Image (cartoon, rainbow, N blue to C red):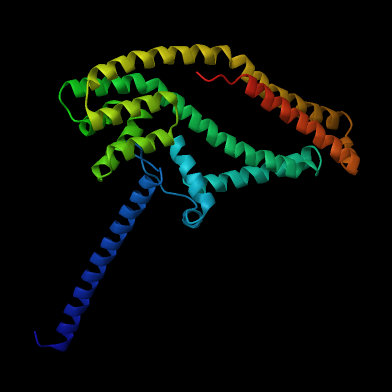
Amino acid sequence: MTDPALLALGATLLGCALATAGLHSWATGRAQRRALVDRLSGGPVHGTASRARRFAAVDRRLRRTRLGRTVGHRLSATGLDLTPGEFLSYALAATTALWLIAASALAPFFGPIAAAVGVWGAALFLNWQRQKRIEAFINQLPDVARLLANATAAGLALRTSLAMAAEELEAPAGEELSRVADQLALGRSVDDALGELARRLPSRELVVLVTTLVLSNKAGGAVVSSLRNLTQTLEDRKETRREVRTMLSEVNATAFTVPLLGLGSLLLVNSSNEGALTRVTSSPVGQVLVLIALGLYAVGFFAIRRLGKIEV
């Protein structure tokens, strides 16, 4: 045991073992930190499979900026399995492709316009996904209220009732309530956790449910009867919203048809007389007239959308 070679070999083996254990501990801690960051930033929640993230370096830099935090907050309300870096990278690629396609198919003047439309379309896509998730959540609110009423009638606490409802319900209600249950387990108050849920998925129905739960948690009272009455009210509003959405489907289709008609007219003019749009947009007067025409199409789109927007 006093032989220097044996001592050196033993020290080397011990060092390798400690290095391996340290590397494993570091990798495990980094994976746990990444999972925690994903969950806190609206990433995958219970029931979703993790995957290898693309553009990790871009995402780390973006999260330090105001734009990255804003995009991350909006993504958390959409339920999309995307990081801010991934979404902005895909949006940049799509915007560049639109620029090139418009410049080659129409005229170089339309390239920046198509890029601006691409940026607006990315924001519109996030709002559409968010609204779609809100609608799906609203449709599940009667089941949420019913489960909470039954659990409360059985003598369970509100925290336990929320966790049980999160396990019973499918996405998106199950995922959102799981997030609320996780926040409650970490020590946040019921008011803060439910208030954040209401801010993430704003709707009148959810605000009423959250207000009922918060008041009952603070002051007590006949929470079971309140939740059961609220369940019936939410069912009635669900049917009303479905009828209104069906009635306005034609108006919404018209709003998107109007800009497509304008785009089709440009393609028809350029295909019937090759290079016509390039000659038109080569002069300042032609550029101003094109911008005015595009502005009128945009005004028509927003006017039709506004006329077809009915709050229920």
